[in-house]
Image 1 (cartoon, rainbow, N blue to C red):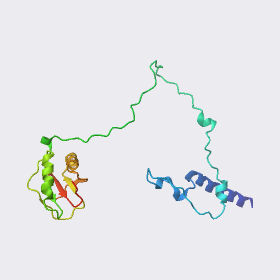
Image 2: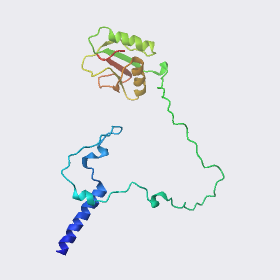
Image 3: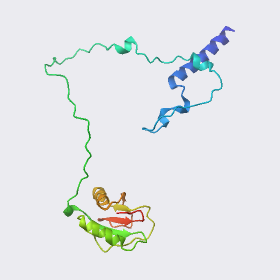
Image 4: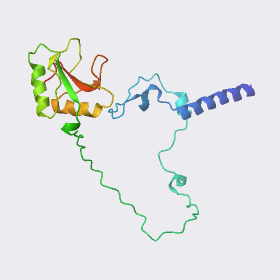
Length: 196
């Protein structure tokens, strides 16, 4: 009889230890929530009082004397300095960063294609690109195929230029060039979302 009581006590101790170690929150864990998401209290139906939860020791939220007492500093081999030890930190205000502007003579050529039913859209955007300092190669044309949204396509090494062209033309997306696009220039494909 005594051995079965010891076995039951051991099982309860192991379960209680696991609950303390891993927590009792279940799927209510904060790790499952995206950062910055507002927290919502969890409401779970209760099936009665828990006898296990009552026996699990809870960590105290009050600091103990051990936690508030700092250990003595370790001996140092460097002599004490007479210089002030207070460090100053730069202000934490952040300034918006200005996008890098590529000089006109260093910009790659661009091609402009219309993937909408709007007549003359590619010509209008090509003119706008020229006014912003871009060299438009060839004559603006229609793009045949499906493109999800207006995009500036760029070959390897031209991401920065693609992002600048997208800003200059009011296009919200830059993407790596497709296989059938020229690799020495940027390709602009306009879709019905373009408001320019």
